[in-house]
Image 1 (cartoon, one colour):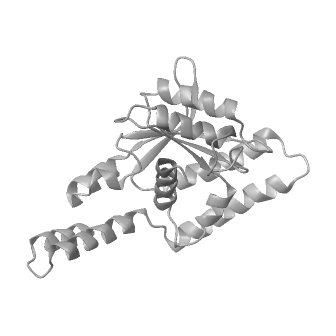
Image 2 (cartoon, rainbow, N blue to C red):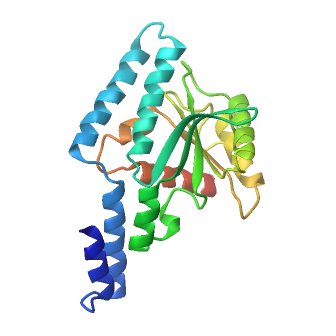
Image 3 (tube, rainbow, N blue to C red):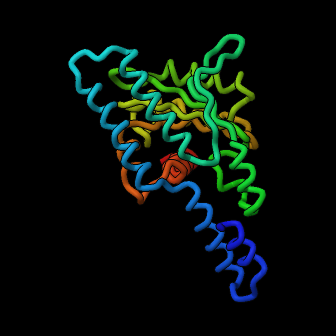
Length: 227
């Protein structure tokens, strides 16, 4: 098993420290990688979303359901997280609330994976699906920031949509600019990342060169660097 191999790696003198690290990372990446069946199923769900979006006047419910089905699939296949859909707080509704799964906790413990390999240092993050027929404006980013604040002061929030946020990622105006302002104004020890995940990113997941983890980490790095 992967666990037995990991134990042999830790106890063996045949590997130097760098090789052990590389082997651990390969083990982690096996957990977050998709199988051939996963890719086939993903493409079916993604194509259904694209089909609905191409319709002349798709209903918000139809588009929203297709988008949520796709996001649920991505989150469930992340292995380390379990997703709870349409959870209500006292005043808000959360589309997807992702928490570290039991199997994720067990894998982290058995393989001694660094917690920083996960998407956030917290045990949870929040996702919002926006079924607009256009870009998501700054007003909704502000509302989402409030939702994160009342949801355990959540540090990672991902907005899933077809067309993405208004503005451009490398600028400081519109929705993208607001995500930068929120990040830089947040507590230095509790930085808040509001990330845009759109059709371009959904298409990236069709390739084995990308994983949900790698895309999210890249977006976090861009927010940190301001580019």
